[in-house]
Length: 359
Image (tube, rainbow, N blue to C red):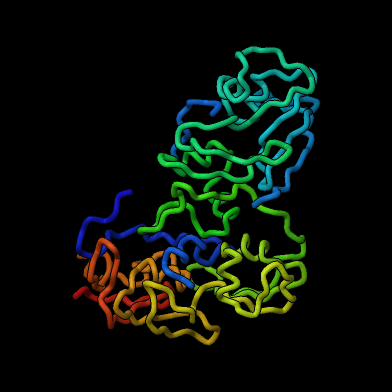
């Protein structure tokens, strides 16, 4: 996997804020790495768990459908924990072409998923797959399934790609991130989610419908910093909502007990904050709500470490070089690793950036 090969400050990334409400905290794989105590050969499109699967009935046709309207289906639909349709059970009159059109596939794709020939008549009660049946390009590893056939976990093998995994298991990148309680699954800096031998979750567990309604404190990156729990909150509900793993919650909040309920009214820290990590062991300032604002670097600090410790999406966006000759004004010991020179006070906030000429 390629790394930056320049010794100068890293290239600029997009200025757009990658915002989402309720997705936060660094992934457990990221923080642990920072030193905290086949059915089809088609190319995927570019781009644990007891999941709550649901069986529903497809909507019936209207009396007078518009000429350009898609056909509708009346059979049972089996969805995964995110509501994605993974299987369809046919009723009289269904055809492969109709099923393919309704679910946005070519007929050839659906026949490939189900090892059928195009035009094969469908008997009522036929259970059709709406996702690949096994390994394919970019996702050649082994998966586990629940009794309904919904994939629940997957072990990454060399050569796998994010696009291959999401295609094989009918998920979006964001759904895969939520299932694993991480803020993202794409490569960021030198942090990788898709790593050989890693077993990843493909579904989320059911949570109490009352959960997730407590008060949260956010930083300028729309990452949760603190959350006050309500009745029904659990490690899973908080983890899925704020993208922080159970092990991290236990580390950031020593009063919590693993496998025990979280009392309502508990204020949880959702980022390391005061807890130093490898790559971010310096001191910081915060506002009246405790949201980190600035940070002073010490030897060994890196962009990735600082970003993980304080829930920062793009450190460079808060520290632009006003001359625009280089992406950022702060200086590096090593631009490849992202190690920063010590003694620099940098901004952690988009709302209070530190922009100045580069040295």
